[in-house]
Image 1 (spheres, one colour):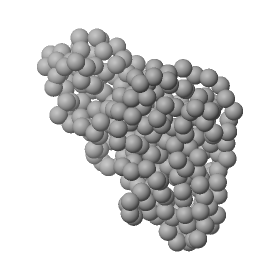
Image 2 (cartoon, one colour):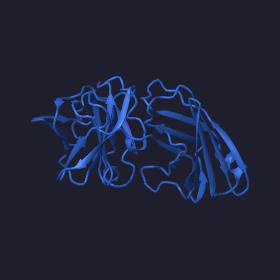
Image 3 (cartoon, helix red, strand yellow):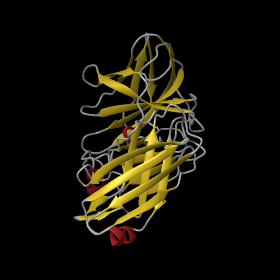
Image 4 (cartoon, helix red, strand yellow):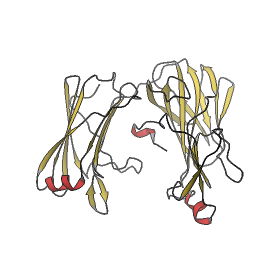
Length: 313
C-alpha cells in the first residue's frame, strides 16, 4: 500500500479487486505478521467486489468513524492481515454527513498507527483527481485519533491508512462534509536519486522528482538535475511526467538513466546534487549531498528533500 506521507498518490483508479491469498503454511502466516513483505509468496484468485473475506480467510476489524453523534463503520478495501492480502478500490463511501464538531477514528487492535488523506470530489470511483491534502490524526486515547481536516471547508472523501508495527496494513474510506477550514500544507518537494545497494550507490535506473501542494498547478514546468562526484560532473533533464489524474498543486518529473552511465560519468560518492526547476517562468534552485542528506525514515526510501531558493509557493 502506498504511503501518503511522501506525496505519493492513493491507489490508481483502474485497479480492480483482486484477492491475494497466502499459502496456508507456517511460513506464509509468519510473513504477514513480521517485518517481512506480507504480500510476498502469494497467489491470486478472483472473487466478488464485496469486501468480505472468503471462508477460511481473515479480514481486519472495521474502522469506526464518529462525528456529531453519528458513526459509520468502514470495511477495508485494501489490506494485508494475518493470512490474507487484498488490493482494490472502494465500491461505495459510507457518509458521515455534515459535521460541525470533532471527527474521531477508532480501531480495536493495539499498536496500529493511522494516517489520513482528503480527496475531492467525494466519490468512490473514479479516483478523485481534483484535490489531495494530508489530514492530521492526533491521538485521543488508546486506539482513537481525532481528525484535523485540512484546507477549506467542504465535502471530501477521506482515506484512512493503517499499519501494524510487525507487518500488515489496511486502507478504508468515507465521505464527510466539514464546516470548519483547516490549515493548508506548505509546498513540499522530494527527490529519489540514489539508494545504498549492498554498499554501492544505485539509482535503479531512474531519477524521480516531485512537488506537492503548490498554490496552483503550473502550466509550464521543467527540471534539471546536476550531479558532481569524485571524478566528474553530469547533468540530466527531467521530463515532466504526464498523468490524467493529477491533483491541484502537484507536478512530477521522471527520467530513466542507467546507473552504470551515471557512475561512469561522476565516479564514487559523496555526490553534490543540484536541482533547478522552472515553474511558469520562475526559477528555483536547491543543493543536497548524498548520502549525507538522505532520509533515514524507512518509509522514505532514502529520498532527499530539496529546500529551494526562492521558496516554492
